[in-house]
Amino acid sequence: MTYRTTIGWSLITSGIVTLLLAFLPGKSLWWGLGLLLLGIAIFVVRR
Image 1 (cartoon, helix red, strand yellow):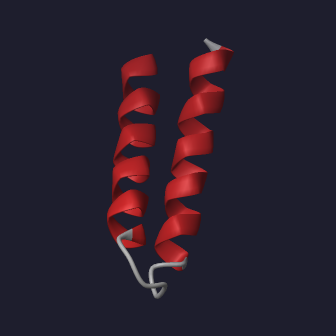
Image 2 (image 1 turned 90 degrees about the horizontal axis):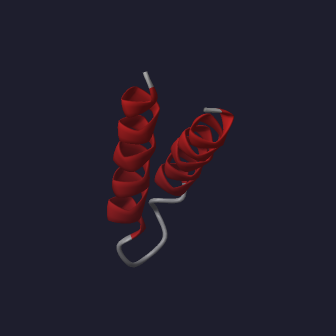
Image 3 (image 1 turned 135 degrees about the vertical axis):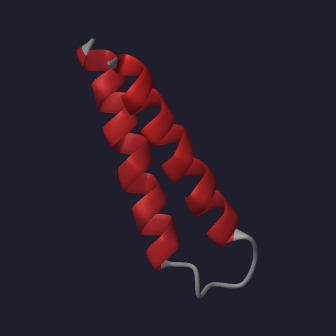
């Protein structure tokens, strides 16, 4: 259980950080959204 929680929080944090860096050229915005959604999905499935 703690393994999934750790992965979920890690992905959510990565997504937030990537969104903050969205001003960089490239597709970092999509990476941020993707990681954020994946982290939320893992976090919700854990319940």
